[in-house]
Image 1: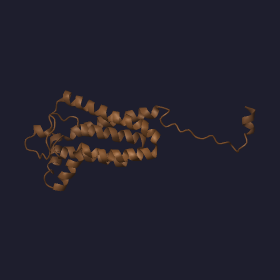
Image 2: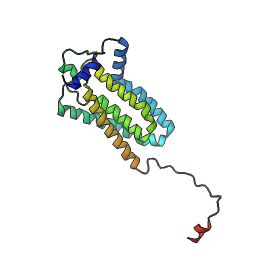
Image 3: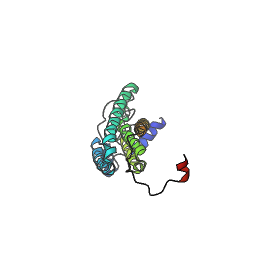
Image 4: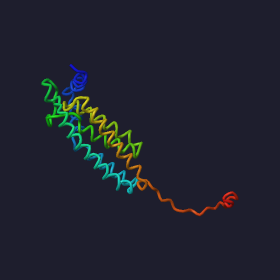
Length: 195
């Protein structure tokens, strides 16, 4: 048994023992879950800086969409079966999903969003990364992914999201703050007059 399968079995072995944990893992695995924090984030972002939100929110949507597309293409190339299809004796508490699991698109998408937001707003990390970790762990718990599927998704999504946010920060107009001109009450120094 590989270390990846051993880790998978350790996490997945907890499934079915607690209806509360099963419900939590299924809830965290649901794509519908992300609408709630997304709407809350959008509202906060709008309040914080609507100018940045108007530019960065569509870019974040594009980052997640492209990351999801690339993850699906990689799955087809790698063609690694999900544990729920490859291992007959696991605790499966949800339908298995499509045939291939490497990398986890849940992990790619959430890590891309978390990294994007962390680069733009470093203090967002204490909310976004724990959510990313819980969603990734839930995917292993329910039997949909191996641990390495999730780790690869985090790596790919995190790098892509961070790179796109970094590129946005390089655009001078993104965070340009126009400060009102304030007349100076300090007389110019003699050194400034001699120049």
